[in-house]
Amino acid sequence: MHEKERHGIILSAVQDRPVVTVADLCGLTGASEATVRRDIAALHVAKKLRRVRGGAEALAPNQFPGLAGRPFSVNQTLHARQKQAIARAAVELCDEGDAIIINGGTTTFQMVHPLATRRCQVFTNSFPIAEHLLKHSKNSVLISGGVIYREQNIVLSPFENDVTRNFCARRLFMGAQGVGPLGVMEADPLIIQAEQKLIGQADELVLLVDSSKFESRSSLVLCPLEEIDVLITDEGISDRAAAMVEGADIKLIVAPSSGTREEAAS
Image (tube, rainbow, N blue to C red; front, side, top):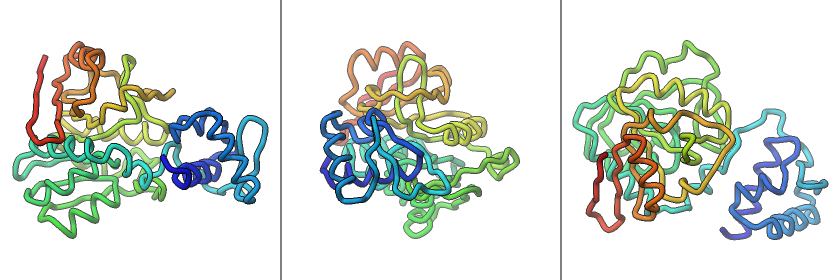
């Protein structure tokens, strides 16, 4: 990740929380502690944030806190080729007329391009997904209501009786912050709350994660592995991670970016 991208992530993070630790920023940027400390020092000198012991804080904190995690614009640049292959494999599971839910995220966003040739009923909480499908496809689109989070480009509702409960789908396609033995992990409690509602509205849960997500961790677990029906990833998945997925009785689809697809089902 370039310095400019790291600085953007750091400045976004300090606006969302009173104080962001060096460890938090290492996790968000993927950079070393020494690199993050240098970035904080440079931004402090530039008067873009305030350096504090063990981390940094905003000069003028945001009155309305955002979500934890990297911004959509940054995530979109990471593992792009793998995400495109994963998304193509996901759309192959969709039939004409299917009712599907596509949760907001940069991997799920890549589904919009192959979906241009289909006519599905799509429910989403993602502005970029809804906008692209409306402009470039014949799919019908329903978008959720709630609070708009600019950094992640998603809409989340704190209410139980929102429109989510009125849409029943054949499949839910979603991404994740990380995947491990304890289950599917996310970075923010609000995302957990919203996604748990979505899980209850679909017959089948399809998880779209590039292979780096098997190395990522978070303190928040969305659901155990056993709740996933299908997991689509790329060729970088390790034998250990593949064994973990298959051991949880999940159908594993490996999507090579070259085009052909390997499929393994336990």
